[in-house]
Amino acid sequence: MIKKAVILAAGEGTRLKPFTENAPKAMIPVANKPVLEYVVNALVKSGIHNIVIVIGYKKESILEYFGDGNRFGAEIEYVTQKEQVGTAHALLQAEEYMGEDGFLVLPGDNIIDEKGIIPLIKEKHEMVLLVKKHSQPSKYGVVEIEEGVVKNIMEKPVEAKSNIVSTGIYKLDKKIWGILHDCAKKGIYDLTNVIQEAIGRGHILKAVENEGKWMDIVYPWDLIHVNAKILQEISYSTAGKIEENVVIKGKVCIGEDTVIRSGCYIVGPVVIGKNCEIGPNVCIFPSTSIGDNVTVNPFTEIKNSILMEGVSIGSNSLILSSVIGKGCFIGTHFSTISGGSILKIGDEYTEVENIGAFVGDGTVIKSNVVLRPATRIGVECEIEVGNVVGGDIRSRCKVV
Image 1 (cartoon, rainbow, N blue to C red):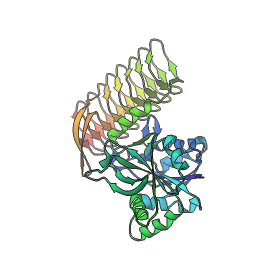
Image 2 (cartoon, helix red, strand yellow; image 1 turned 30 degrees about the horizontal axis):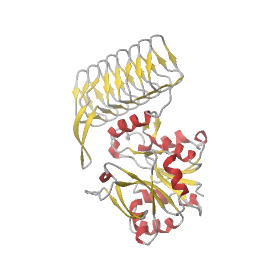
Image 3 (cartoon, rainbow, N blue to C red; image 1 turned 135 degrees about the horizontal axis):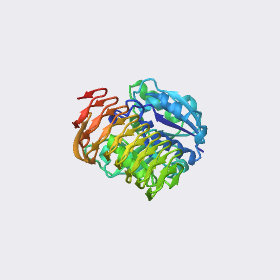
């Protein structure tokens, strides 16, 4: 019986910048919870409480948030990957914690639920890969399967031979450690390549299709899409103070010590964190997450967006399909325009539609600023009054 799991959460997530400049990808909030929390919760609900998390980049945020795991119903231990050279290298750091039994391996930056993990645990084979049908398989590792057995995994092929992709979630046993060490000696540090080596040596890797939830967050705009899907599952709850003449429709979750001022209009699914002050006369529309300690001033409209903790939004503002990072201070009459654009991230060009802006932590945007579709602003920037901004603004820059 599988009793332990390793979560690989050492990576940075460079394609998610600016939001990973101050935190690892696994700690980026979706529906007001870090992505890594969804992974831990899924394991606990599956009956696995002994968890090792491999940490590295900005590890302090993970250590501080999860601690010993007690408040999540888990027993969490940590091991550090000092250099982020690959997922196989990360897994090797956890070898001494696993013992002789089989175990699960999961990425810490994908959202998963117990419906995917439980069938993986129950599968009798010692080595199993969780796979998923996907509409854009060429973005992932495409899996070739014969009679339920994995024959090949091809990373991001130009033309995919199937629509079945690897989730990067495995059940493995002690045989993998020898293969990991052999591959490390050859300079092979990616887990997919190690698994391919195991298949080449004749080890059987069973494929199990995931019937549950699995969502990958690669780019900043993925945060908006995944946030919208997660919010579909929230329950209605109000723990704050709601003044008279507030209209709330649909599933809305309001945290402790939050005040919703008179004249506000909120249509769920929406989640609002603790100790926020909203309004008066603010409109919040579906698929919006607002973190803890956020202030939204009067006559502002927010839709399909994420406001992380500690954000302040000035009056008469419009925020559409955008992500605003932690601790941003935004003046009055601010607008993000939602639309289409072609973005270059690394060597990749991606066409996006109906996307607003992405603003890094600690940025100050003064009054009467407009952000064009798909604008990305780095951390701790300053945008002066009256600017119309587009494209990419590097961190700690000032736009006058």
